[in-house]
Amino acid sequence: MSKVRQLDDIIAGIKDGATIMFGGFLGVGSPLKSIEKIVDSGVKDLTVASVVNSYPGGGFDLAPLFKNRQVRKFITAHTGTCPEAVEALKAGDLEIEFYPMGTWIEKVRAAGAGLGGVLTPIGLGTLVEDGKQRLELDGKSYLVEMPLRADYGFIAGYRADTMGNVEYRGVSLNSNPVIATAADFTVAEVNEIVDVGEIDPSRVGTPCLFVDAVVQGHSLAEHQAVFERLWVSTGRLAARATAA
Amino acid sequence: METKDAIAQRAALELADGEVVNLGFGMPTAVANHIPDGVNVILQSENGCLMFGPTPSLGEQDGDVANAGGQPITLLPGASIFDLATSFGIIRGGHVDTTILGALEVDQDGCIANWAMPVAPGKYSPGMGGAMDLVGGARKVVAVLQHTDKKGRSKVLKKCTLPITGKGVLKTIITEKAVFEVTPTGLVLKEIARGLTVDELKAITDADFVVSQDLCEYRLHS
Image (tube, rainbow over all chains, first blue to last red; front, side, top):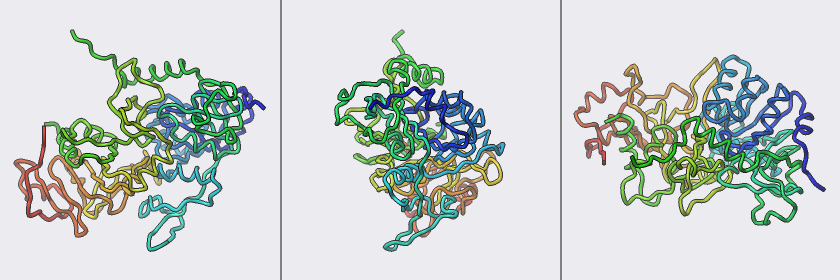
């Protein structure tokens, strides 16, 4: 059975107040088309979980969700790259729950892996410890961190077959494979949708059983162009200097 | 010499051949430009790779190859990529030898504050990112910061005033004026900038420190 869906149909089903987890790291490996459609839908009072926020300076990937005040609560390790979110936070329109980055990903992993939580020493003696249970085991102290899951998980990959097996490329897998395991409904946005059997099993980064829907994102060529524009416009890429 | 340049140059001397190293953003990023000849380190980018190289030129970039600042990078021979759970397993599991991190404040108990600036009552920005994991997991944690703030107030304190990133985690503190080793009994001054006396340093340093028997001039290499 094919899991290929129209993105619009999925977005139409998202209700106000939903909890959504997004893969990606500052826009890299982010499900950009899905985010755009969620922005356009106007759905609000969202709880959004993403390991970090938008590309530095805002205006890209997750930033419009905060600009439009569609997010009520944000669960993350870092938000400083997104001026839109910092502004919403200052104005009192946004609640942010911070976790150390390694704790954030382990909370998600725990949710997907059927664990009751995570024991970690990270955050002991800091604000992160507030309101949390502390355990002593073998003479060492740990914080108890609870699992983190979502109604929807939107991940980004390179290719998916129609069964939902996802292949990643480059350094863009980041939080995607873990998030795929921890949502009630996982949507894989990919550059290319291929027939079953096209992806070598050893290249499958997320097995099909974690994926509920496959949607077409930017083609790889479009995807490359998006990042070239982004990096050139923010001064991160320059033509190689040629001899005068 | 630029203050930040001096700090980055000095911090590079903290790295030893063969180490796995994670450099934070800001001043620590510049440390990579000053690693001495003969010292080869494995740089980690916490979004999920080891052995990354310089920024690519236009046309050589890949939209799926970026560092933890979202900026394009290249991958060197021997590079590897992995997901975030593995990346933070590397960090938290004690597999990173040295991390060099920028700091807003440090103190004589080895605490570092570099994640939380109050933006409204009870609200903080920007967030700790991977810094708490790094200070908790790396074998050696080095803080780099300017000795004083814009108003001339010491940022090397008796006790941090901002929310801390980690308690008692620092091994070394490097400013443009001095290098301190953090010991169980407090700070030990190891190096002092040329032309500065210990008394002058004390006058601009809130933290208490003792002077090492082998105190030397601030080391820089070109």
